[in-house]
Image 1 (cartoon, rainbow, N blue to C red):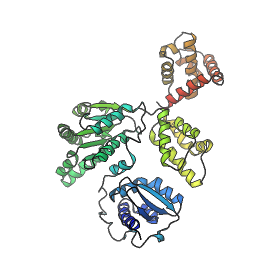
Image 2 (tube, one colour):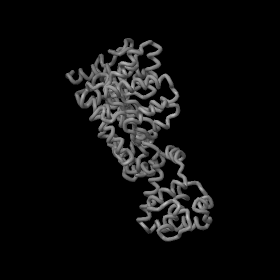
Image 3 (cartoon, one colour):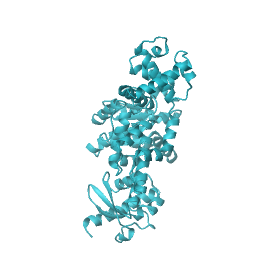
Image 4 (cartoon, rainbow, N blue to C red):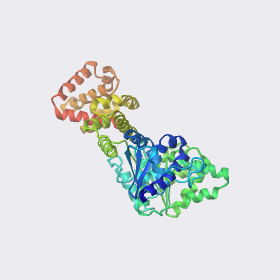
Length: 457
């Protein structure tokens, strides 16, 4: 056996040991059936029975495997699978003795490493964060905080779920640790902070708790809106914040709300949170969503046509998570069925998800009027008022057409929303725009652009 093979076996023992502390079922059903082949600083090669088995492990347990490799001292290396192997191909001793505790790991201790930090090394960086107008300022601020700790303090990033806030938070840690592996970076969710606080109270280890969160260079806290209405936790967080702020340590917080909008958040914490830089991430534009899909599929064997990617980016606009989920669904289907994915196949596979997406996004006539007015340099009252010059009448018809297409409102409802116009006026506008769009490419472009903008709101 070569040194590479022997080393792979030794590392695999530790990896499997860690995995068993997280999920004995996953270990027995999946990881026990993999064979360690070789390992170096760049990659570990694992043998699997076939490509489908390997794809399933990669897609469903990739994070767990990355955490286990990080625990074994191989954070961030690439995992490569080769088919045609079974466990009998492994040398004796390749797998841990299941009757003994895993090497170096207590079976009762599930938090020996920070799983989030292990994942960030592999998955989250500034380089693979897709920048658009909706997140450019937040990206720049996070980059500045990583490069010059304390210069932007605190940095508070807010926005809806799945907008990329956590990615930026972890990208800071990734960047800092890449430049200085000895940097003291503490990443946690606010819920994690709460759980650690309650455990310290139960075990009378408050000193250790405070050391863990205050003896750091960077404190990165996700979802601080969960501080609301938790008086004791807010007191502890306030003191932790003040300690780090006074020492010039970098604090970065994320939330789904502005500080002043968090129910039950004490005014002194609101004041602290807004004392630095506060920046919002808004829903991704069509262009950003399309760029995210193209980047994500680089890590998959699946390569979709531009028409399929465009369709997904147009139809899934609520946030980034279902966008990536759609891509993963198509990837799993392609691997299982061993076939390429065309547009009609994608529509069929994603039909349930697309239906839920459509139900979750309700577009109002008021939003349509505002978007059309902005597109043509008008005011909403121009569209709803009595004026009839062509530069107003044409946008008004476009707004009526989109109101009929993107809402469930009747012709009568739409007419009332446009200054009390008649049912017949709305019907005429809809038919006119439909006919014109068939022969006017510029009109078709404007209509597509407005629909993408409205679905991304």
